[in-house]
Amino acid sequence: MARISFDDLLSIGAHFGHVVRKWNPNFQPYVLMEKNGVHIINLEETLKNLEKALHFITDVISRNGEILFVGTKKQAKDIIQQEADRCGMFYVVERWLGGTLTNFSTIKKSIKRLQLLEKEGSSIYENLTKKELQMLNRERIKLSDQHRGIKDMRRLPDAVVIVDAFFESIAIKEANLLEIPVIAIVDSNTDPRKIDYPIPANDDSIRTIQLIISTLTDAVIEARTKDDVVEDIKLDSQQSDSKEDKSEIKEEQLSEETKIETAAEELEINIEEIDSPPEKTAKKKLVKVKTTLGTDSEEKKTRGNKDSLKKPAVIEEKEN
Image 1 (spheres, helix red, strand yellow):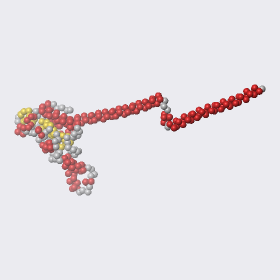
Image 2 (image 1 turned 180 degrees about the horizontal axis):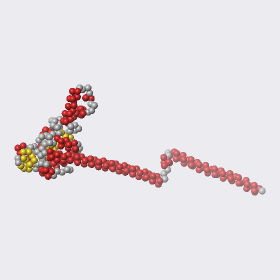
Image 3 (image 1 turned 90 degrees about the vertical axis):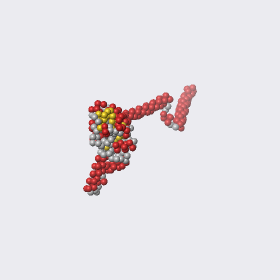
Image 4 (image 1 turned 135 degrees about the vertical axis):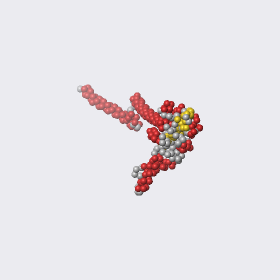
């Protein structure tokens, strides 16, 4: 996870607060001192709170959460849009529309209207006059500017990151009503008790905004890459387990086949006789018995004929 040092914050003027007469008494825990009528922010507290915010963002992303970046003031617009696009999250850089969170169902209808107007070849443009086409074009441009950073947002975000909590007080109120955690850069003119993860710093400095928001964005990207690596490892392990299971099954089948073959060889079992029914085997035995008897009788007959032929010859010799 990216780390910011004390010197990094000091070099960009993150420690300068507002003039004393504009301060909020609840900001006292983050004030280091007063110098030339300006409050000096304790940068040690800034680093400590930033670390908490980074851990919270990592936890949100690990649960497949979504984050909404908000920065409608001039110094923050470009930074918010650039960093939100870099990490693939939603953003609001134009005027905050009341009910963006608390009346999200109406915002979704407006987004659907924008998607219909942006769809090429839509039937809504058929048979319209030139004036009506111009009106629809103006409506499309207006909705596109209002919802360009949230037109793909299908549900409420899991966290909101805000630049200048004092300037974006309406967005913070809506998030508090819906119990959506808020991470915000808080200056000395703001009550930090309304923020879940306040980051005390100079919210008017472009370089301070850039450094803090880019650090939060880096945390989002790192958390996402870690999740992707973990998913890849799980898939690889599942595939290897399935391969091992298949090889074990094959080995078991082969071992069973070899056992059957060896048993058949030891017992000298004739597979054909085992498969044939008992009636056929009995008939085969009878045929064998008959054939043996037949051969014995034939042998006896042939012997008798030989004896009968020999006897007359002996008698004739005696008579002579």
